[in-house]
Image (cartoon, rainbow, N blue to C red; front, top):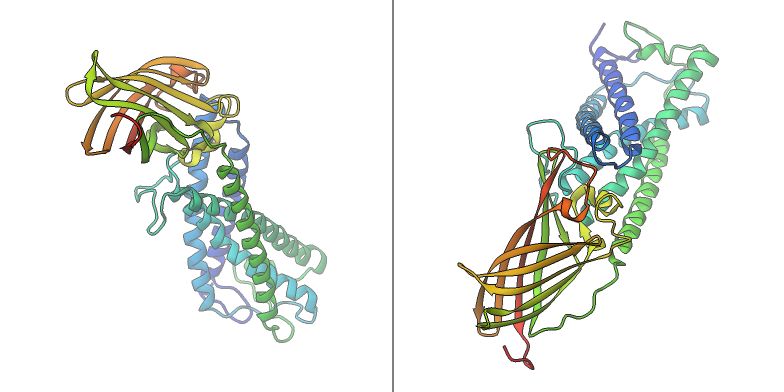
Length: 402
């Protein structure tokens, strides 16, 4: 059998690409569907969910590479004429579906890969080449947009795939022609009847489908962005120092990988004096909006009742006295989270330049103290320790004594 196409048959390379693509896609879609429907329960179910997503992503990357090679090969090869070119509507539909299928085979795995690269943790791609992509920042905006595109165009891919298979079955069962046979292993010569119609109308139809799909995906991404932005703002902070800028982050160990997250909404009431009074430099109370947390690809999971229970417990509070330590200071107090309160010590350093202070510190919380993921008793799946880091710049209020 010839490696290349002719006017009457497909070559071995085209057939190999066709069936390899079919194998990869028909494996990846059920895996993704099943993994999505597994509950976010701690324990073996969550571990299985992560493993299935890892396999799904790995197959997706392979499908993306094969699709690119298939398209490049197709551009160099003649395409056998359709068996019934005089059936214009049928031929136009077949070509439109083919164009849509080609594009989906690139857009779906690529958007999934971009979403993976823009997030942290949970279900790594099973290869040694790293989990990031050049020019793809780890931001919520990129992740949400890529996820929306992936969701929409997965539906386009499935629809195109169903129509493609239905067309092949029609040709084999109803028309009893050699359309399907030309793509099966072995040599099958079957000339079409008459010239093949141009591809421009079909390509235009497929393009319109994709423009509509992009529009839908962007609308979904904007709606998700509005939902995140709708987190109830906190009251204005009080105290002798006012935070001007800062970050409050956490790092969770999940399935052997660090997953980093940040709280977008939090405020700190700070009373601080450079000179200690009765062994204290002051006090601090930090109020945190739990729903404002972004935690890589597991944000939605983290907000659920088995973990942060953000809907029922939307606020976390850290209250502490500030006492001297070597080096720097320690905030000795408690964290109240998910209705549970536990003691916490947070060592930190501070550099004061006039009326501006730069503070950096961190501590480790035990998630079990707050009934977070209590059903997950395997630290290899979800680490017990949650690292907390804070970095802020504050200025002294002019109307308060420092």
